[in-house]
Length: 459
Ligand code: GDP
Image (cartoon, rainbow, N blue to C red; front, side, top):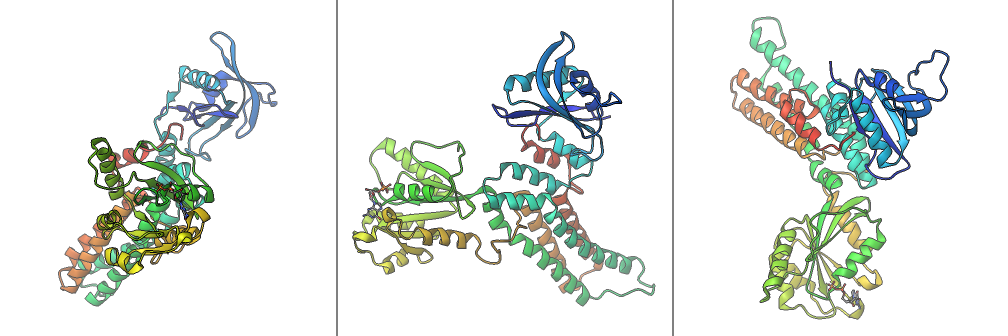
């Protein structure tokens, strides 16, 4: 028998209400022991899925802990597929802690991180990719990242993976029949058929994989470094973007004196803006540390926004920065065009042939729309449409898709070289298993533990 787990399910802090959640066979009994309803129904029993008003009472000393609502939910129609009880306390840390302690002294065990969702997974309510989406929902910072996580939780990714696996299974069955009963009257598989099937499967995997770049950014945010010599308008840009877009209020660990980080949303894409201290040669040792750190941030950036002062010709410092940017993905702003333009775009393109150039007057908020649109276009570039909500956002899924895709390609090469069917079968089966790991089939205990370690307590 699984033990009964308990945890504070709401955020740990002050709030309107605070919820204690219990799951497991003893959930109902524990609730009975600590909760006294004010008004009972005729049977004097707590009915399934009815909200009761009453008090949490410590019967060891008859002390009233809090005034609450409580509900009991009978398995299997619950989040965990087990019996569940929820107690709605006042949103006070004291009330929550005391109520939680009381559940523990009456037989519950403190839940581990993500244990409620883990049980939902083990009891078949969610597959692994759906369970992973639950934590992404909780952590989502923009409407778009929420939508993508939500559709993954509803099974969009699982459905697609299952569809690919179904095509693979049909092929595997066909290969096996040909291997095991070559003399029977069956559809003979030809190398031509094999290649067609494998190339179809490979396309399906590639199509899904193509969403992964955008998916990662939607989930984790785009790292954008703003760079340029002093006084070109870096802080002004940061402030303008922050004002224009809804800022996401989050503490970002690792913010240093040398770089300023802000998390915001540009047209629904989470963006982490980093204003670097400026990369330039220096004699000052302390400043050097700051600059080294800026270079590091800059190396981790997905996109670099270089700001140039358009009211003056390029300086050596500008060209030095352009040299460092090299082939990284970049947008160049020729700023302060209200004061005239003294910079030749041709020279910029000599240093940064791939760069997108935009003329701006940040102080007057000129060119900001164009900048935002360029950022969005970059992210949804290629095949991914902005309204698409099936995106591969998770690195674990991406790696499995890559490996599965490679196995299918290997099988295709073998089919092309007319190699033996049983060799080809091995690679197709391997690929089928790898895709199974995405949804939690044929997945090891280790991986399951790693997935749920990322959860918060009470989820
Ligand atoms: P940073 O050192 O790169 O962060 O530059 P700031 O954002 O502090 O800007 C330096 C100065 O340039 C400030 O006085 C800004 O008001 C000014 N500035 C920024 N953008 C523009 C612009 O588009 N036109 C003009 N005329 N001044 C600007």
